[in-house]
Amino acid sequence: MTEYSDALELAMNQFAIEVPSWGFANTGTRFGKYLQTTAATTLEEKFADASQVHIFTGKCPTMALHVEWDLPQGTSISSVLELSAKYDVGPGSINPNLFQRQAYKHGSLCNERPEIRAEALEHILYSIDLAAALASRDISLWFADGSNYPGMSNIRKRKQWMEEGLRQAHEHLHPGQRMLVEYKPFEPAFYHTDIADWGMSLLHARHAGPQAKVLVDVGHHYLSQNIEQIVAWLLSENMLGGFHFNDRRYADDDLTLGSIDPYQVFRIFAEIAHFEWETNTRADIAYMIDQSHNVKNKIEAMIQTVTTAQELYAKAALLNHEALEYHREHQEIIDAENVYKDAFATDVRPFLKDWRRARGLPEDPLKAFRASGYLQEVARQRQGRQGETAAYA
Image (cartoon, rainbow, N blue to C red; front, side, top):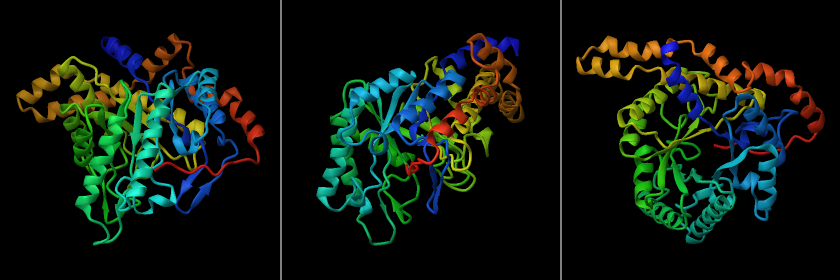
């Protein structure tokens, strides 16, 4: 691996991934929540837990914040910035809540009632201003809007309402901010979802304006869908803004990244790496985690996820781009595939141990965290006051 050490070094120095505040809180399924004594119930506890992930992995400098759960109306911006400074974790992407209020039963920006659409837009504009005050670049927009029965909604009118709302939100963006438009094929809407796939998200982002990009959630696809092809198209169109990483077995399971199909995540990273090699540019992509740690310990699951992401990103950095292009040009199918398989099969863990050691990080982040005693201490502090913080979809 010595010949590739420079490529690995550069890749790992560049790669950072954002943790979500809701990943440290009590979560569950539509059937109920599973409480953990060490789950975070306050914003400070979430910052504290996120700092542990950053301390032991070295590459999680920001935490995504949810407006409804972390930054409700009246939140002191200075207090949030003080927590950020105290725990050395910056405010990350800002996530409005456009799916949980009773008013959104029939949709938010796509609601048939204009006063509900106005309420949803006002919440987005408020979130944009919050992001500006916190020096957060990205506003991540996911909509539960859709319908459950044929005839229930005018799909074309809802499309127009969504376009109008996103355009107005884009006009409110501050310089340097980005609006990331996420998609999901189904759930909680089961007949039609207003932004159901990457093409719809792409069209809406383009209609909104130049500061809008597409956000890809790995779990938000039908089974067997070729996600790396979507990545390739969005890269080609300069419209890939960010990722929500997780894994799934059936649908939007929100399992930990790489737990079911690590080769898929590798292929996504490989597509991005090859694009960067071809264009000699660095893709401006926000890498974020979006998982629901229902049965795994929250902090341990996050550390496991980050180290898995680092391993898969490092494997993608080993891709022999020249050989890959040669085999493609000569239509040598097996050899081209083996370029992928050879990189994926490479054990990068020895390199990552060296890389961490050189930066004063523990060689085994999870083992070091477990030995730190942090979990035992917070279990004692938080015993008996588990919150009912909802899971993010």
